[in-house]
Image 1 (spheres, rainbow, N blue to C red):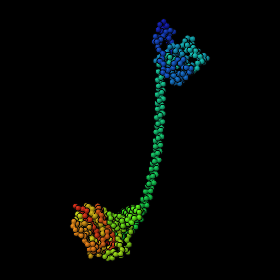
Image 2 (cartoon, helix red, strand yellow):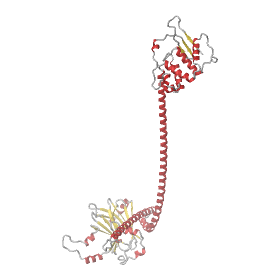
Image 3 (cartoon, rainbow, N blue to C red):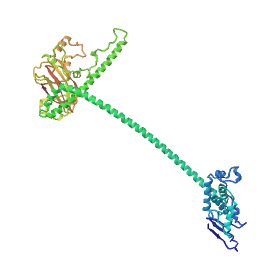
Image 4 (cartoon, one colour):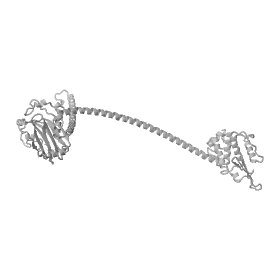
Length: 532
């Protein structure tokens, strides 16, 4: 233990101050009865609201420890540590306690650190060690004071002799509260982050399950689509096999006509024709089914109307088969009907030379029609024969009459136009042609012949022609059946082609209808030929 004594001149009136440093604590006693005016007038520490301790009498029977902890807001051990640190750091700087106060504070510190004074455990001090003797006396005066009581006394004495200690403790309390607030905020932030992570985890899990469900549904849809595709493809192959068996000879002959020296191009053209034939068949099959559905609906409606009648003979009856609407705007769709059946050759042979038998309706095979994109090459080839290029004037209908050939069994046709579409249809006239050559007939409209025979005198009192005479004239005309109905064809974009099996001896009528055009004439490039 180091002891340092500093003394001034004994004869000087101002040399009565003695400073002693013991264990890092400086003791500077003042003479008895001599205190500076500042010390006499120095006020005590200001009382703290709810935190600064009051006198012991204000404790209301509480123990000193609990009272000081309650008023200062710190545990006693922590409060004592703050007081000891403040005393060591601020002594001689921020405040100047008296000699007796320092002795008391040092003795209380020893009491807390080492317990009650024990002469046997402490070394002797010299006779002239005034401060050491004073320190021992002060320590011994504490007697058996408890450690906690010594801490309480140390805090109270320090607060009494220095009014800066209370703000010092309050600042630490505020700092601790701020740290506690930040700690709680950090805990709350971490809790929210944990909740957010949990929410995101649940959201990701939900999305994962939804994605798995979506993939499962897509896989199931793909599987069903693949099964449906295979089923449709199998059905298509079966239908195409049946159709190809019917048209194999026609398509082979047509391909041989188009590419006589190229088997590869012939096979490619045959495949194209077979695919187009299949598409046309499916389209017309759909139209037939649609017509059947419409007929069924009308029949149900008619039955409902008939059932609503109360037995009256005048009640509306259900529509007959003849009342079912036909396809293609009321025209007989021989194409659609004949696609469902293949005519037997024996029936076709029963046709007489001048027309079909009177007792049996004519049996007409379904035509085959297709398109091909080589329109430029086709027109270049046709231009070499001037007779194969015809001009259909505005509002006109040109009919190309092609008699059947004795050595032929199929008729083929091809045609195209330059810039605009044109109407086209095929009819068969049951007549014995006088000549086997192809002829071209021009009329103002497709119904010109009918108009000539059925003219009426309007705005006059003339009576219609005699019905008997008209019937005789009609009986003299040959029968004409529709093979392909007249529709406008986009033959300016592709070459339109087709074929038909001879139903008997007669004349094919290829009609090129431009009656709907009032301003433009059309150039038609066509070619017809027969095969066995």
